[in-house]
Amino acid sequence: MESELRKLEALLVSIIAAAILFMIMLSHEDLFNAIGLWLYNWQTLVSGILATIAAAITIRILWLQLKQSDRREERQMVREHQAKRFLLVFTLSSVISYSVDAMKALSLALANSAPSGSLDSWSAPVFPIETIRSLSEFLETSENEVVNARIAFLITQLQMLDARLRSMTEYEGDRVIALHENLAVYLLQAAKVYQVTGSLFIFARGEVDELDAKLSREQLASHLQFNDYGEGNEAFERWLDRWMSRGEYWRPQSND
Image 1 (cartoon, rainbow, N blue to C red):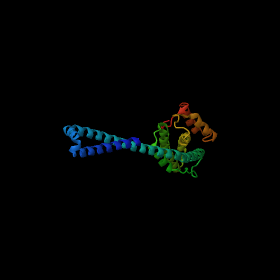
Image 2 (image 1 turned 30 degrees about the vertical axis):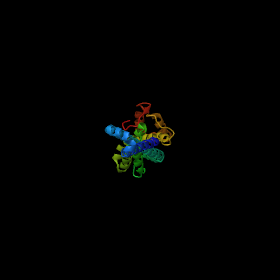
Image 3 (image 1 turned 135 degrees about the vertical axis):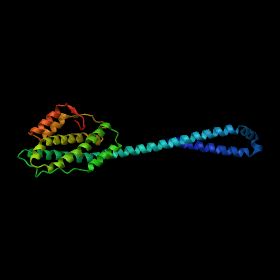
């Protein structure tokens, strides 16, 4: 494109130089009388043709310059997206750590929220607030629909989960008993965050460019059972069985 642009610029300069030369020729009647007479008779037509050619070349040059600028901006956006994609690995690592801490804390809370239990010594895990900004910035340059849907899911669920965990310290007495059922929901929510986050690593590392839109429910349940999260808790097992009965796979959406 740059070579074509230079050629057009050279052609435009040549046309202007030729026009100047013709003007000089008109002033030498002895040498170029015939040419001058012809140009005099047809000067309107010649001027119109030259003006049209010059205008067309000028428009073409401007179009090429705009196209070149667009391509330069597009390449810049691609580089920016690639940088954010590789940095996504560190953000996902923070989310994984938080979701693991949340599942451990919620499992402990489930064990201590029975009628005879207490949450006096319980505390919510520290929420990595910077992850929300990093995930949001990634969405600004990403055009991958499946990945964007999972990132959007994480942003929503992380903020919701953090608000729920921090509010648990306000429960006392009979409210602790009422909280027991909610804890099962919170634990399942934290497990979903863990699974969705884990599914994004192969994309962030550049191993694949496309992800399956669906995730395995069995894989999530196996992770919970392997780590004994919510093990033996009737409320949690009831919620997990209900969720597993919806099908073999699930999509990261707030209503699933």
